[in-house]
Image 1 (spheres, helix red, strand yellow):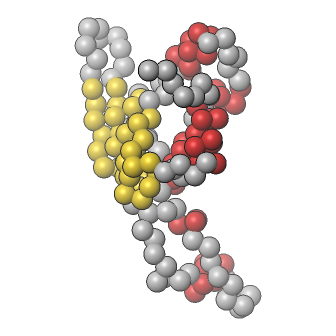
Image 2 (tube, helix red, strand yellow; image 1 turned 60 degrees about the horizontal axis):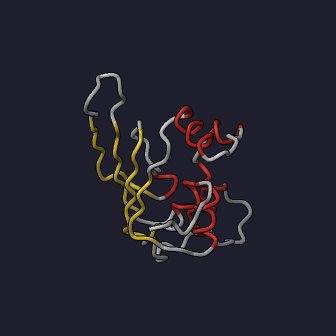
Length: 151
């Protein structure tokens, strides 16, 4: 079956976020390192840009995480166990380590399962209390509507 999209990961993830797509499950399986990323890009005739080597999937992760419904899960595959992280509103459920078969010189594969429990705290906007004498944290505490649903 042919694919519907032929886009760089960042472009695809931003497209999904822009279109308001919502998913219950996201499988995240990018190239695991720069040499693999370069090999994949060379294979399709695309140039690897400098920004892609510094934080190759940070923007893509930011965008696609907004497409995950609360209660939904992201399964990330790679060489590390960092996953998407709490800053994107996710909490780790499990981390699995898979040893490759066939050779001892290959890296272990990490599988991180995370669940979106709530929106990021920064998505909750403080209300203006009108008291400019309060310190910023006091102002934030007094202005939050704690009856506002986080889930």
